[in-house]
Structures are given as structure tokens and as C-alpha cells.
Image 1: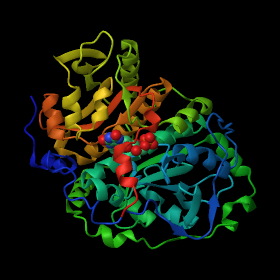
Image 2: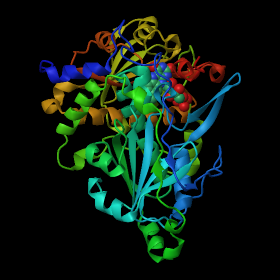
Image 3: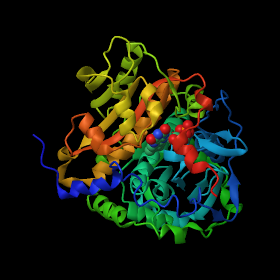
Image 4: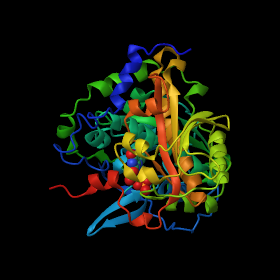
Length: 489
Ligand SMILES: Cc1cc2nc3c(=O)[nH]c(=O)nc-3n(C[C@H](O)[C@H](O)[C@H](O)COP(=O)(O)O)c2cc1C
């Protein structure tokens, strides 16, 4: 028996859309588009590499640190494609992002890395450049904010919520958490393929980390990947100190941002309230801070992984068809292996041998809750996104807040970030299977719950449409992204 929904849980309604109130409070039509990335002034190290489609890296654990950062960051957190709309072009990245808003920023805390002076760095993904923002001493002093202080290198993922809230209002904050989860999964996968061991923290003391990184107001640390490699450490120990980066790179300073004034016009109160609740429920560092999404044993080599990361795209159009049931079972068992949701829903539209309808997967067992054609209803619930009608199945992952003790908002936040990591893994598996997938973040939460007969304590963490890409799928406009990228008058 579920507990009644507490007033605390009602607070999560800030992340939900109800019909007629979607986007309420956004500043899409009133403020200029936010800056796409953060900039620092000062010298930088360019990490441009020549990795291309099908041209995998050849990992050597003892490779120079700069070379290693190149091999890691470009595929995990980089631009992999350019899309043209007439004369307009837009950049596409190695991870999905709601509406192409890309709110994630990445910082690198170096303790031991051959050829790289210890300190704190900001990675500008667009220019594949590394800016040193704090020296070794400061990084060491402030290093207590890191959940793993022994790691050789730590990657801190932050989000700049203005980039998504500008378009999606408060729901945009939740999208940022999901995006950070996508990047966390990428980093872990590429680190593993390069022979490094890593731990992903999706709960952390964000205020302490924000102070360490001297973040702008509203930018918030979301996740951290702690990476180490014993063999690389050996190479670092024996290297000549003169080869360190310090001789060449001085500290960089944050450039002024044009966004500050506009961002102030947005109503941040509900998000600040949520952050307070998250921070209040963060306990002492423990195993519970680690992501609960397990990396499946797929793609342990760069050769297998890189083409998937580079070629992954979100579907914009599906071909209405029945997929063999075998393909669905492959995906369901893959999801099981990630270990986050042993129980989730599927809206089946076109799977051979399965009557269309609403299904529930519980530990790999599939039960039909209601037979019927839900194509139009689902597309309607998803803000009228008609391409969803043609997918073969839609996955919906939820958490029941009544099972989360004491309104533990940090656990809710972690479920969302981990949900993003799972989503990226589903994306890559789908790519490997030659099929198409798109996360769907635009939906009316209450109507989805009603469709799935879920109580109001259930929060939809992640939903995605899955099927065969339409033949001309690559040419079809991805509306949620295009609308934001069209030139503003
Ligand atoms: C949190 C989130 C929500 C999204 N919601 C939608 C959606 O409702 N509809 C849709 O078509 N695509 C959605 N997308 C997919 C993005 O449009 C897509 O990731 C982005 O355009 C970049 O393209 P790419 O994934 O092919 O690199 C979403 C992505 C994320 C991360």
C-alpha cells in the first residue's frame, strides 16, 4: 500500500507539464537565446584530435596525459556532426540534449596525469580546449569537496540551468540532470575502453564543489567521475617534471557573460527550493553516492564503442512496422542488465506476436495491462509529437516517491541523473542493433500516469520512443531542436 503523497513530493510538480500550462514561465519569446558555452580568457591547450568515424583510437595506458584527454573528451563530450537547414547549420554532439540546449559544462581536476600539471581545468568542448582555472595548491586545498580524493583525475559535470529553463521553464532543470547523466555514461564507457578504472558519483555536495570551481550563480555541479589507472600512474611518476603543462599554461579567467541580466528575469525560486531540499538530504559520503546504473559489458574496446558514440543520433521519424519480438527481448534484457529499473512500462505499437497495448516488464516478464491501439493517445500525451505514433514501442521508466524514505530529494535527483545514463546506454545499444531511439521529455506527466494507471506518487524519470528509423529519417527535421535553433528575428 502506497503512502499518501506528501506536500514535499508535490514540490516535484515544478518539473511537470499539465495541458495548457506547458512551458509556463519560460523566456523563449522574451529573452535572447542563452550563450551556448562558458568561456575563459587566457592561454589554453587545444585537444583537437583526428578521431573520425570508424577510426578508433589505439589506447595505450601509458600515453601522455594530453593525448589521453584527447582520446577521451572528444568522443565522450564533443561535437560529432553538423546539420544544415538551408544556409543555417547546427552542431550535434556525442550525447542527446533536450532541444539541443546543451546545458552541461565539464571541469577536470588533475592530481596525477603524465604531462599535465596538477590543478583545475575547464574544458571548452566546442573548441576542444582546456583552460587552467586553478593551480595545484588551490586544487589540493579545495580537493576535500571531491567525493574521491585519491583519484588521479576527476571530471566534474555541471549544468547551466538557464540554457534549458529559458526554453522549458522549470522542467528544463530536470532535463539538465538527464543530460548530465548521458555525459557521465559516455565518460565511463570511454574511460573503460582506454583501460582506466572509474567511479561515477551521481550524489555529491554540490555547494562545496561549486565553491571549489568558483561557479557563476545558478550553475550547479551534478555528477563526478573519478578515474584512475595504476599503469599510467607509473608513467607519471617517472616523467620529467619539466614536461608538465605548467610551464606553458597560466591561469585563465572567466569571461563576462551576457546572460547574467536576462537570467535574473526568470523565476528561480522553485528551483532554488528544490536544490535546498536536495542538499538537505545529502548524507555523509557513502556507496550510495555512486551511480546505480551498471555499465553493461558491451563495447569494452574503442573499436566497438567509438563508431556508436559518433554515429548515434536521436530519431526524428520512424517507419511504421512490426519489429521481431526477439529485438524487443534483446533490448529488455539489456535494460535489465543496467539494473536501474527491474520494473517499467512499455506502450507496444508494432512488435510481432505481441498484441498492441500497454505492457509492464517486471524482472524480464512481460504482462499486458491493457490491449489496444494507443498510438494517437500517446502522441497526444507527448505534446502532440506525431512522429511518436510510428515507433514500435515506447519505454517509460518511473520511480515511486512513496518508496523513497523521508522525501529524499537527493535520491530522486540521483534517479534522474542515473536515468540519463541508462538512456544513453539504450541509445548506443539501439544504434548497435541498427534501430532508432529518441528520448521524449515533452509530455503531460499526469496524463501519462493516468494512461499507465500509476498513482500520483510516481514520477516519470525517463521515456523514449524506439523503432525502425524511417528511410528518409536523417532528412526529417527534429522539431524540438529546430525550433530553438532557427535564427531569431
Ligand atoms: C531530456 C531530453 C528530452 C528530449 N525530449 C525530446 C522530445 O520530447 N521530442 C523529441 O523529438 N526529442 C527529444 N529529445 C531529443 C533531442 O531533440 C536531441 O537529443 C537533440 O536534438 C540532439 O540531437 P541528437 O540526439 O541526434 O544528437 C530530448 C532529449 C533530451 C536529452
